[in-house]
Image (tube, rainbow, N blue to C red; front, side, top):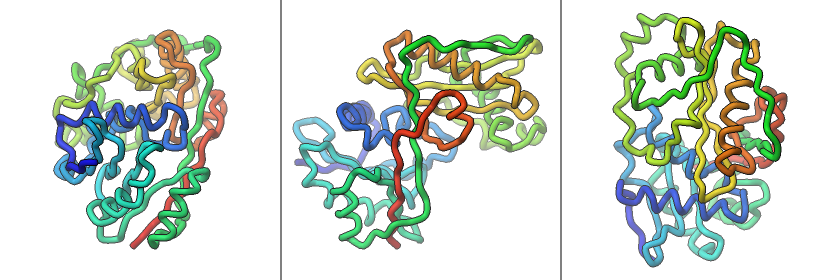
Length: 290
């Protein structure tokens, strides 16, 4: 078994690790290859820390990993089932190398009893923070009803980075003043380097008659899996409550279904998703060690 710090050349191997980790059991579905790919180009992701990611390799195959979530202080710690004996070592590495001044938090599925026993035996304690993963089964076509005056469009962040960021700026409630948006230089990210598996046809937006993007849903799907991952979803304030987001999400889900996805997951507990047919699937509890 070999340990190494992550480099860009390990990207595909880490994605394959997440796919394998979630192949038989979805106890780690809060972390999957889609979340990893989305996170790598998120504006809040601290790329300067990437070399601190730890991976464990057996015969050129990643079998375990310790990965910080955006920045130090929260992390994913995981290992393939047949290498479970490595879990304490990976946990120890994560605590030593990925904690911040307050310590380290990791989210563990409530049914992962061995992992829970390990973290508790090494000084981690239950925190109030939790995560919920919701699921929708894609066993039938979903009815799409886009309000009049709007139409669907594929939104590629590489080809339209400013339009993409402006939509997210409004959709995640940073404001609707475009001049303020344009003054904030941090909202113009570099061209994504790691979205190697991005499928433009699953990056769906609604546009109004003026050509403005008003709602967005992106799905991440690989033919190596049977699921799609929803990230992100947003709608500008003036178009909320009109059924626009529902139509955009359903359109994206139908397209993922046509590619072979049998289900879709979203990391959320919002009643909005329940109204769309998602159901709570996995509950994760955070464990913290200062």
